[in-house]
Image 1 (cartoon, helix red, strand yellow):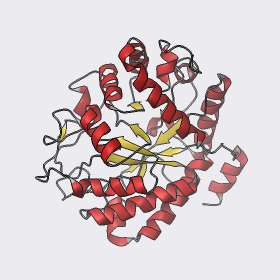
Image 2 (cartoon, rainbow, N blue to C red):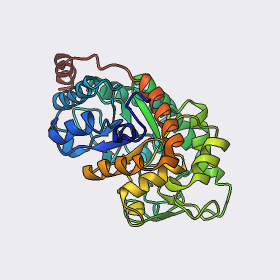
Image 3 (spheres, rainbow, N blue to C red):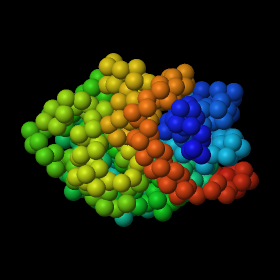
Length: 346
C-alpha cells in the first residue's frame, strides 16, 4: 500500500502533477487540488502574484494545506529566467535576458546572480525555479534567441551550470530546459510542434549544455515539445527513445524529468492533456505540467488510475519526486522578515 493509498486512487497519481491555480489566494479550487487530488506541485503565473507579502502568504497557505493531509511539502515553482520571462517583478531582482548575460557577464557573475534570485524566491516560499534555459539558439529567427545565453554551446554550458549551482546555493531547485534543445528551431512550441533543423544527428551541439548540467548535479530537467526526425517520429516529451535512451541512458540522468506545459499548442493540437500526460509518463517523464485547465488535472489522475500497465512507471516517478521533495528547505522566514527585506530595497 502506497503512502497515498491504492495505485487506483486518483491521489496516488495526483502527486505526479504540477498544476496552476486560478488566482492569488488559497480559494476552494486550490484547496481541493492540494487536499483531495494531492498534487505534487504548484506553478505560479502573473495571475497568482501581487507582492512579496502576498506571495509569502499564498505559499505558506498552500504548504499548510499539504502538510495537513500528511503529504510531503509541495514543489512550488515559477519561471524566473530573466528578460521577458520573469514572473516576479520589482522589488524582486530584475534579471537581464540570458542573451545579454551571455554577451556581458562571466559565469561567476551569473552564478552570483542566480544565488541572489534563489534566496529571494526561498524567502517568499518558492522552492523551484523553472530555469535556466540551456537551448543553444543559432540565430535571431529562433524563438529562444533572447532566452538563450547564445549560439556557443560551451558558453551556454558554462553559464547554465553556473546558474544551476547558484540557484542550489540560494536554496531553490533549478530546472534545466528544454531537452534535447530548442536552439535549432524556428517554430514556437507554444503554438505548434517545433522541428529540429540541425543536420547533425548526434545533436552534440545541443546536448553539451545538458551533459554538463547533469555532471554539475542538475536535479530536474524539462522536456521540449520538439520533433527530432533523426531520433523519433514523436515529440521529445512523448518519446521513450529520447527520454529513456538519450537522457537516462546516454546522459546518465537520474533526477526528475518534468514536461513542459502539456496544454501548449505543440502537444494540445495532437492530444488532450490527460492523454498527453499518459503518453509522457509512459515515455519516462516523472512530473506532468498542466498550467491552466484544473479539470484536466482531475481527468488526468482519473485516466492514469485506470492504466494498470503504468503502475511501475508511476511508482518510479513517485519515488524520484519523493527524493526531490526531501531536498526542500523549510519555509523559515516569517511575514515580518519578508516585509523588512523588501522594504530595505526601497
